Structure formats: C-alpha cells, structure tokens
Image 1 (cartoon, rainbow, N blue to C red):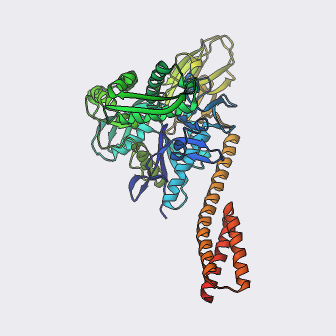
Image 2 (cartoon, rainbow, N blue to C red):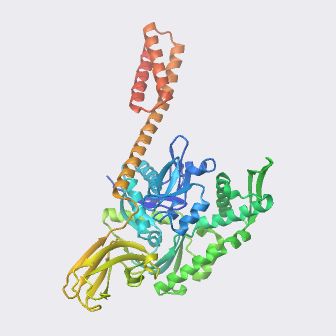
Image 3 (cartoon, one colour):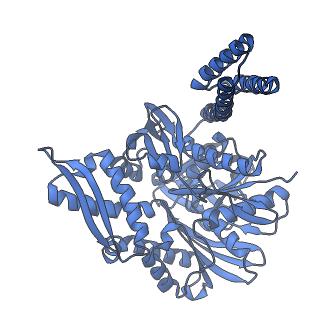
Length: 598
C-alpha cells in the first residue's frame, strides 16, 4: 500500500493541500472542485460549522459569526498594535484569551486561533483522505518565513488539534523554491517574492544540484492583500460618507459587502482598466430612503491608493539583498508567490527592482503547497533528493544589564548552528546569573519575545568582572534551541532546551483535539445517515408504487404500510445510519416479495 504525506499551504486568504502521487506532485481539489479553499470559518444558526466556500457565501448575512484573516493574528498577544487595528476593522468579535492571547467569538463561544486554523486544516485533511481513500496523518505545513517562535508553535498546535502529525514546519518561500527547483538543474541564485493575503516574505536562495541554501529571509507579517482590499474599502467608505454623511463602518453587514466588493474589484483590475462597483440598498437614510453605493474605480486610481504598500515590499527586498550579501544583478530568477503578485503594478515593480522579468512557469497560488508536498514525500520515504539549509528568521540572544538585547545568533544564520559569547559578573560576590532568552530585532530587551528564563547559580563569589560565564546557543535543523551556561573556571554548566512555546497549554490542546474529533465524527455519522436516507427515500417511493399497482393480501398490505410509516418517520430526522440501513433492507425485501408474488 502506498504511503502518502500532505503538503499544506495554510494561507491568510486561501489554503490548499497537495500530495505526491506516482512521483508527481499535485494539488487536490476540494469538495466544490476548486484547487484552493477560502480560509474562512463560520458557525451557522444551526450550530453547524461552515468552511471555505460555504462560509464565504453566507458571510454577508452572518458577518459577526464568520471569521477570516486569522493567520495575521495567530500567535500574537491581545495588546499587539496589529491586533488592536484588526479589532477596529473586522466585523467579528476579537477578545482576550486566558493567556493574553487572541480569541474570536462566534455564537457565544470563544475559539482560540489554532482552533480556527484546525477547522480549515481538518477540511483539507478530509478532502485528501476522500481522494486517496485511506487515512493520511502526516503533513508538512508551511508558514511565512518571518513568523516568530510563537506563531510557528501556534501553527503546529493547529495541526495537532486537527489530528495531524506535523512532520515539520517549513517556510513558504523555501517551499516555493523547492517546487521551482524541481523544474531546473541549473545553479542559480533566486529571489522568492511572496506577497499573499496577509503576509509578505522575501527570501534569497542559492540552488545547486538539489541543495537549497537560504542566504537570507525577511518580511512583514502584517502586509498583504488584505491591506490592498482595505485601501479600496476606505476609499468607498469616504465616497459614501461625502455623499450621504453616513459612516458605513458602523454597520458590520455593510462592511462585509464592501469587503467582498473590494476583493473582487482588486482582482478584476488586474485584467481591466476600470471596474464598476454597485452595492444597492447598502444603507437607509434617516427618513427611510434606501441608499445605494455606485462608484467607478480605475486601475490608475487603485494603484495610487496602494503604491506605498508596494514600495514597502521593495524596501524589505533591499534589506534581504544586503543580508544575503548580493545585489540585484546577482539574482538569476525571481519566483512570484501569492495571489497579490498577479497585480500588474506589483509585477512591474518587481521586474524593475530586480532588473529581470519574473518566472512565468510557476502558479503563485499552488507553488507553496506543491513544494511542501515534495518535501513531505521525501521525509516520509527517507529519499532526500533535496537538502534544505534554512536560516533563523530573527535574532536570538539574551537580556543584559541595562535592559538591552545582546544578540548571540544573528538572524539569517544557517541552521544547524552553534554560537557562543563570554559574559562576566556585573557586581561583587555575584553567585547567580538570571538568563532571559529572547527572539526579535529590537535593541531593547522588553520589545522582543521571551523564549525562556532560567537562573545559573553556584557561581564563585568574586569581584565584579572576575568570573567568566560562557553562553552558547545551539540551534538544530528544526529550529529547536539549546542554551548552555558554563562557568569557564569550574566547567559547571546548566543546559536548557527550548522547544517552541505556545499560548495554549497541553491540556487545552488535548481538549480542543477531542472536541474537534467528536464534531468531525458526528458530522461523518450524520452525512452517512443522510446518504442512507436518500437511498431509503427512493426505496419507499418504489414500494408505494407497488402497493398502488398490486392487489396484496391484508397481512402483507398491513406489514408494508407499517414499514412505510416507520421509514417515513425515520427519514424526518436521520441520525442513525444503522437503523436506516435495516429499514432499507426490510423495504428491499418487501419489494422482492411483492414482485415475486405478482
């Protein structure tokens, strides 16, 4: 039996799943036949969970119970400026969780963001299993290259809640480079420009005979297509306010209609010079008059609204080139990833910046999942044709006296790696040293993410500066950090292994996994019952026809009518597929009995 592992691109706007079948990677279409699934989750009035297209279709009428763009918030704290910005613009309710994490409220229930992502992952998981026809549990999930430790762990937690064995988390640009690299044998230095729905990444890689060496990576986890949509929304809100003196931002349903219209206009303007935006009955005036929104948006106007966002991506690209110690002229190929790279302005800006036209043989919506599937298949079968030499996306270091951040392992250091620095005691007779391990890019310690804290005790009392303590950071290929503090005089040491931290406890993850599994099992049972009920309905109709066209003995007639009554009653609320199967079997036997006695 062939074993499979999934490659999953868990995107801000859309997600997709891929496998390698018969040696070739392929995207698996969802239940609606599309290759990508909207990263949208909703709870219907009935309490049923809606994912993807089903959720998107009812987003206007159920705005407060439909959540999207949660990838931009996952792994963040409620006090982050980006979270506060979203709380003022998104129609659904964002609240603080028990660990200062971000949660969303739907139908009076709070959901963690890993839970929301797990619902999307569960849908993709089920789509893949339906296609293969057997269980698949192992997967690689991709994340933005610039995700920090907490955001990566929150993604792993989502995979666990969805019942997946997450083999590895890999960076989206790296996955895209793998997919691109399988199509070329040339030695190249490439730039992967990844502008998706919610995040932007740029990675510079050297590819040589199956070795993918990441030279640098940087980005912005709050820059993407959502921001382009919001510029159109702000433009339309301002136009409507000028004409009618009404602020549409106070109406969640109106804002949801604006979001859908803005996203469509953005996509259409990649092909058309202008679009007409018509939203009838979007608001009512104080005297009860129905108000409509009608506007023409040209491509030039749209480009003027977002030109600063495009320029922001190019500034980040310049940083990536400097970190990689290369220039634009050293880049052999540019690979575009993410739906926003279809925008003509983005393509033109990238071409001008890198002095070359981007690769045309890559589908920006599918390339990340394809690359993840290739890597997952190689890990599963231990046939590693590609070697990934990835880097640390952010600086790693410790807090030092004065509240500063001292970097021990700089960002873009190839992993695995080992870096050491010697520190001395800062005051007389100091016998212990508190070590706070940080990740980030700020010079002030408190502005960075805390990965761990521990105390190295038993230091020999001595005047300040006399005792030397060596701090070593060892980072393995999976990004696990081991921190060692060693007294160079006594060789006494303290080792702390820092696995990725999360805002969820193991108890919460276990509970969420069980709730998700129970819901999926219940849905599967209900779906099976509905399918059996549909078959039973046809059998009942066939039996009714036979009763009407045949003269039956009273005993058989009474039995058949009772059977029809039982089946009709059972079909009104089909929740027991086994009982329905028994009734279906009884009806089929009754049909055979009548036909044989005729």
